[in-house]
Length: 152
Image (cartoon, rainbow, N blue to C red; front, side):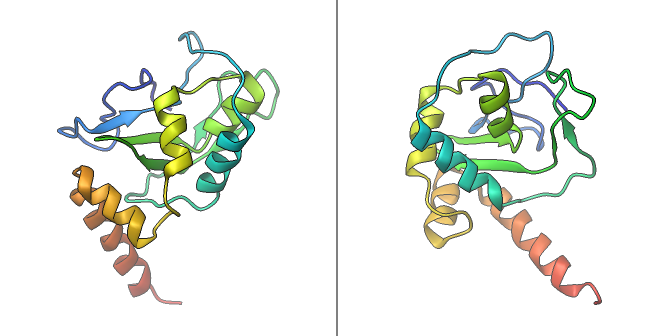
C-alpha cells in the first residue's frame, strides 16, 4: 500500500486533485499520531467503510504491515469523506489501524466523518461535487454502467 502523510495531497487516484486529502495511509517505519478516538466517530467511520462509495477499482489488496501476526489485516476499498473544501480519502483499513494500532486520525477528518451523509446518497454526491469531485462522480457512474453491462 502507498504511504501518504495525514492531510497531505493524495495522488493515488491521479494527479491534479489538490482537494483530495489522505488520512490513515499508514506504513511501518513512518510515524503516525496515537490516541483514543471517540466511540461515535469510530462507529460512524465503520459504518461508512461497510459499503463505501467507490469511484474506481484497483486490483490488489492493502495489507497492514504494522501487524506482527501471521495473518495481517487486509482490505481493498477506500472511503471518501467530504469535508470543508476537501475530500478525505482513507483506506478501509483505517478502522483496523484505529482499533488495533491506536491510530488517531486528524480532528478535522473525525468531524467530517460525523457530518458525512450516507454513502451514495444524493446529499453525499452533491457534497463530493461541490468540492470539485466531478471526475470522481463521473468515474463512479462509468463503473456502474460497466457492471450492469456484464453478463450474468
